[in-house]
Image (cartoon, rainbow over all chains, first blue to last red; front, side):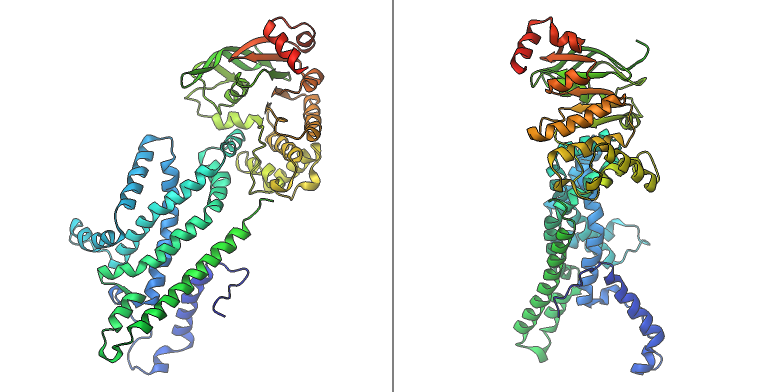
Amino acid sequence: MVFFIPKKFKAWYFLLVPIILYISLKYFLFYEETIDLGKLDGLNWVETGAWGGLSLTFIVSFFCLIFCFPVGMFLALGRRSALPTIRYISIGFIEFWRGVPLITVLFMSSVMFPMFLPEDFFMDKLVRVIIAISLFEAAYVAEVIRGGLQALPRGQYDAAKSLGMGYWKMHILVILPQALKLVIPGIANTFLALVKDTPLIFVVGLLELVGMLNLAKTNPEWLGFAMEGYVFAAIIFWIICYAMSKYSYNLEVKYKTER
Amino acid sequence: MPDAIIQMKDVNKWFGEFQVLKNINLEVEKNKKIVVCGPSGSGKSTLIRCINRLEEHQEGQITVDGNELNENTKNIEQIRAEVGMVFQQFNLFPHLSILDNCTLAPIWVKKLPKKEAEELAMKQLEKVQIVDQALKFPGQLSGGQQQRCAIARALCMEPKIMLFDEPTSALDPEMIKEVLDAMVNLAKAGMTMIVVTHEMGFAKEVADEVIFMDEGMIVERAETKEFFANPKSDRTKLFLSQIL
């Protein structure tokens, strides 16, 4: 079943897949002999520019999700900080990234950004794109988390302080666990939007699922099948997003302690 | 007074334009139980919140256990760890079980080993008689049980002073007694306590002194018997005639 989600599903199970594949391909399945391609090594270096399709969708979404969350969390704390410098930097950062369209951010990251760098400095295009999307989404995540922080009654801060906790202990042990639990729906919302934004990376020449589809439909042999392709891509996106929303709902249930 | 554990000298505090505390002078000796009463908005809560610096005073001196509280106080967390506080709204941490509520601060602030902290917590929970609820979450408990848990949580830090900010005001009448009982036991064990409350019965039973506040000032301070028998100021008389 596609919608089957194990009861004790852990996000890091995803990490096992490439590791198991790598090991089994390299040592057990004797890839090169099986497909008999002569001298071709089993696992070749592939330029990131040549990566594409669904795997790229997953890679970009996965790393952006991982990076944008902690950045957003620190921005949210920074925006509520009592220290003016940190607060203004956070506000500036959030308002800047929320104020520009993602497509221009991507364009800047791949076209303009390298111009500002020294010549011998090289940063992979995919890495640049992932950083750009992460920072962009971090601004949104920050505001969602800030909403959760503001929803907590002041008494929680008072109680934590009165027990002798400093800023970090108070936030890590008392405030953030509650605030993050409150904003699970909002975070899931942002993350779903992020996954659905990944097709935009076509502007820098990276082709993920939809990009590949656009490329494929120009193939004369497949003329007239664009509709089928798009419907198929839509179904795949729906499955990904549905799984994510289901997972977020599971988290909500899991961490529900009130009453 | 050399053995005063809390000293407040000419303390003034404003919320914006509004002056909440006016020239507060207060000394509390070790092991004394003080009850603070007065009409709402008279600055009682602000007064005791200043003692562990949940509110900052603008003028004057506050000294707690030999440490002066001001902007330069580096060890404010250490002072707060020695001053337990119980709030009107309980303020338990809803994401943690009762036991974890009690062990959180001992483990992370006092660096006690987990096992020791749990033993300590169970001991304190036993004192307030909610041991059997230890693994439940705050949301599953009644108000009185939550407040007793809050008392146990504060006691787990083994504080030198306990502050109570209207601990029974948010409770059903039936539950007030169980909380007061826990507080009476604590008082009898010799804890230094400052209690903001409207429970005059409690004041008569355990307090050494009663302080009456109005409009940010300490109007009257007297021995408990004296306070109820012949109050000096008219304002106090009026207040007492209305609540007794």
